[in-house]
Image (cartoon, rainbow, N blue to C red; front, side, top):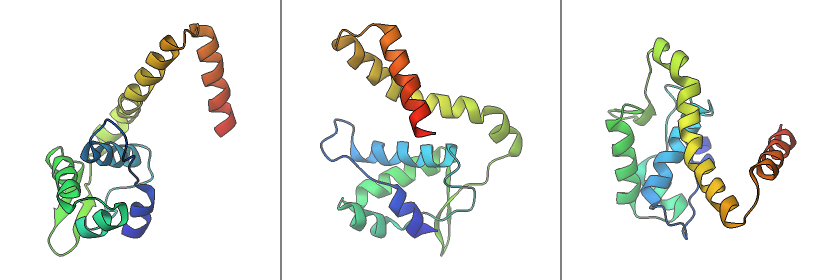
Length: 135
C-alpha cells in the first residue's frame, strides 16, 4: 500500500507553499477523502524523498507534524501508518474536516476571481459546471 500512497503524493516545486506543508495537506486530503484508511502504510521517509526528489528531512518534518496531530502513527519496524480514529469523531466531523481542507483552495480561487474582476454568479456557474464535469 505504501507504493500506492507514494503515487498519490506529489509536490509543486515552484509553489509559494513550503514542500513540507504541501505533503501535510496532501496526506490530510487523502485520509479525509478516503483514499487512505486507518492502518494504511505510508512510504518510508527515504522512499518518498527519493520519489519526489526532496530532502529526507522535509518528508520527516511532514510526517512528524502529522504524527503530532494524531493523523499518523509510528509502528516500530513498520514505519508510518494512518492512525486509527475513534468512530464517533470520524463519523461526525468527516464532512467538516473535508470542508476545512477545501477552504484554502476556494479562498485562493475567490481571490483570483476578484483579481480577474469576475462577478460571483459567473464564478459559481463555472464552479458548478466543473463539479459536474468531474463526476
